[in-house]
Image (cartoon, rainbow, N blue to C red; front, side, top):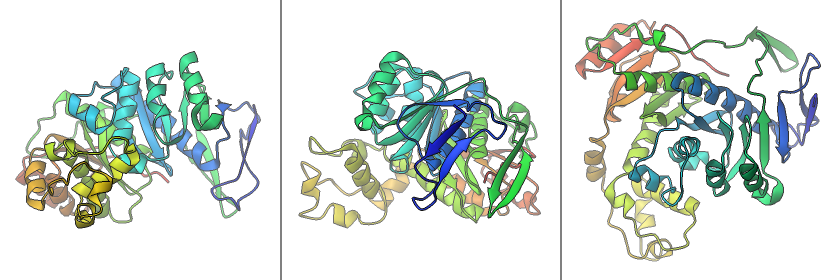
Amino acid sequence: MKELVLKYGCNPNQKPAKIYMENGSELPIKVLCGNPGYINLLDALNGWQLVSELKKVSNMPAATSFKHVSPAGAAIGLELDEVLKKIYWVDDLTLSPLASAYARARGADRMSSFGDFIALSDICDKETALLIKREVSDGVIAPGFCDEALEILKAKKNGKYNIIQIDENYTPDDIEKKQVFGITFEQGHNNLDINKSLLENIVTKNKNLPEDKKLDLLISLIILKYTQSNSVCYVKDGQAIGIGAGQQSRIHCTRLAGNKADNWFLRQAKCVLDLPFKDGIKRADRDNAIDVYIGDNSIEELLSDGMWEHLFTQRPNEFTREAKKEWLKNLTGVCLGSDAFFPFSDNIERAKRSGVEYIAQPGGSLRDDAVIECCDKYNMTMAFTGIRLFHH
């Protein structure tokens, strides 16, 4: 297939729309089911690059959940503990390493992942397909699908679910082009190899950087490579727990990603795990209710008479601000990556509140000394990578 016609571009009024290889060669993808759109394919192709690099650096299966050309979550296939299985709604499933990767990627920020496009580093197996089947999603891209997985996924959305197979040996040209307002832009493809050598320049007094934290920092940098800038990513135990994308101010990225990391951890508190949901409540409705319950807004409405009865068998106790603050003190060992330098130490102060102990950022700010001093105040370890990871 040398050309794929799309329903429309980013919006229904943007017609005609298609993808093709400029050199006339075959496309490196095959559509096995569905009719993917313009944004679907942007998500699919960016997501595929991300998971390919995660697998390369970790030697484990990887998955990502993409929405509007940025990852909502990404992870490698480490086994989940019982708490994570419960908050990701997968405690009733058997999970392969690839399914574990997607459960982590989807589960970190379930609200943002609603209606995602999935990318898988490995051939989709039955266990991963069964997990995908139950989630609201637009499609999946992978290097292949086992027969059982393909049968399961083809039945999704009444046979309209987007299933894309990509040639895992495909490599793009060194030069890439795109047009904006009729003007062609040209640049070298971002072939930057993200590896441990980027973490050698540790600039803080604390030089301790365990191997598992090196991997988490590399995961954060790879995720940032495919996240709309400005961007910041919090990672713990092989998965993103908070991604802040597309913000004009870096502190806003750090706050946004930090708030998501906090929510991820708050969902693990006993009072949240024990919320007495009625039988038959849909997962999306549970996600929305939990988001309100652990947040600072609208909690009175959720727990008010006449409202809580729609969701719960009994009225839950309030998760107070003081209780949340106390629980968040248990969040530690978090890694943080930034796609460009931190211009002020306020980013470090915010990161500390979400358990960050290890940081990778390019460095090069006029205020690097103040940022390093703030890290030293909290005994953090910070590496200057010397590379920027803007993505647009």
